[in-house]
Amino acid sequence: MTLKEERGMILEMIAEGKITAEDGEKLFEALDSGAPPEAARAERRPRGRGRNAPAELETEYLAELRQLGFHDIRMHDYHEMQLHGVTPEFIRAYRDLGFRDLEIDELVQARIHDLTPGYIRSLAKAGWADLDMDEFVQMRIHGVTADYATQMRAALGADADPDDIVQFKIHNVSPDYVRTIYEAGLTDLSADDITQMRIHGVQPEYIIAFRQSGLDDLEVDDIIQLRIHNASPEYVTSIREAGLTDLDVDDIAQMRIHGVQPEYIKAFWEGGLADLDVDDIVQLRIHNVSPEYVQAARAAGLTDLDVDDLVQLRIHNASPEYVKSFRDAGLTDLTVEDLVQLRIHNVSPEYVKAVRAALGDLDTDTIVELRVQNVSPDFITELSNLGFRDLDADTLSDLRNQGVSINYIREIRDLGYTDQNLDSLIDLRNQGITPAYLRGLHAAGLTGLSPDEVIDFRNNGVSLSFVNELTRAGLPPLTADQYYDLDYAGVTPELVRALAEAGLKDLTPGQLEELAEAGLTTNMVRELRSGGLIEPTYANLLQYAQND
Image (cartoon, rainbow, N blue to C red; front, side, top):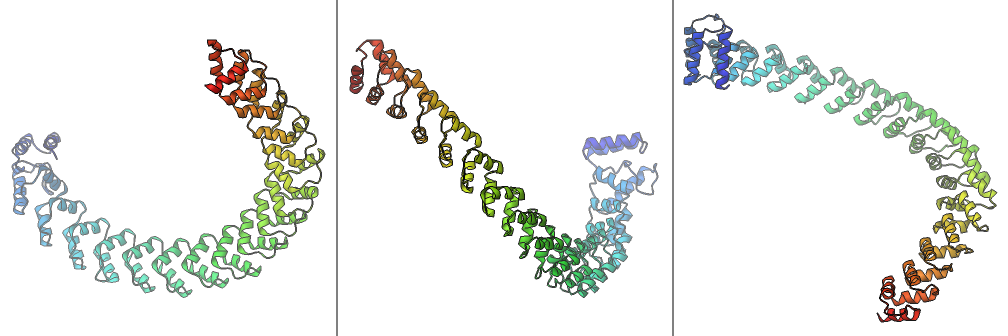
């Protein structure tokens, strides 16, 4: 506490009438001199002293404290001792018990928690004499009585730890509980073991019942695990009677967690699923596979099912009714993997009937592939209406995969390509030939090209913008090969335009190629034209470019 705070405390006591103004003045003098407040009245009187006790009593109190070895008492310490009733008699009583080196804070804490010398004496008589002050305080705080401590020592033995006793008291562990747990056969226990069992409501009868059921080698962690999951000895016995005899604690806990009942296990045995272990039963229960589901799946034609098969069917919601509907659609030799694939790709029995009616006796993998590629029955019908016969699954999948739609086929036909087979259409689409591209070729004057020529033109990197720019620069319509040769030689629309501006409008594609290959550029043409150095003829420009 600071000097300012201590002065404020004195003023407060004067205002409340706890001390006189004269007493307050003496306290201020004591503060200013740095001496203990032995000549003044203190903030609070020792217990049993009146509010107006004379200053001599306060002086006597401080003198007694000095005789007990407490010198240079701070104002804060003095106030705390007075406030909580730490009297010289109280200190002497503790010293008589052997506590000769207690600090003021320890004495105040003892008084706060009503840790009386009588309480300590009662614990000492019970065999708890060698505790330190903090241990006594903790026992007092948590209501450890001498009788409780005595009984606990009798139950735990002479090596009982005071911290353990406090822990037991906190968790309501009684001496009788400890004794009965030992009597149930668990003897090598730590305090934490006993506490954890008490927290989770493990009773001695629970342990004894498990031992009687055959689980006689359980550790504390096992018992707690079983109790947490509400696994009773009766439950274990009933599971064993259902046929699962080789059980460990984890097995029991897992079955209890997932709600496995003995009747559930028996029904599987009776239904013909033999040799199931705990993991099998748990997996079946997790995925809600009932014995009735197994019977229905067998009735639908799936006779040779193991646990993994049943789990996969249940995960993908392949019900027995679903299985039967595919058999009615013509798929009779179905495996679990077939059914799973059909379910994953949302293949319906109606879809199976339709594509088989159009394409013949398809197997499951082919049907799934058609569904993955979005080959619908309507798509097949429309292709037939367009005149395509003898359709097969691979071609249909390729059409869909390459984006050959019914509209694409119609537009291609409208542009003059009426006799193309499906393979040719797939090739055109795969090479990026769109109706828009063909219309662009036609607009540039490139009509009558075969599909192969169109593909070559596209693959040679000649763009429609290049063709259109050359046309706008003044070139007449050319053949596909001529456009390709011009592009390959490096003839640009800008060069053609510059030559036309110089009066060379009638150059052949071959002459343009020679000039470009000789290195003639647009800038060279414009410089020669503006400078008037030479007459801009084909021969002069070719010679100039070759000599440059």
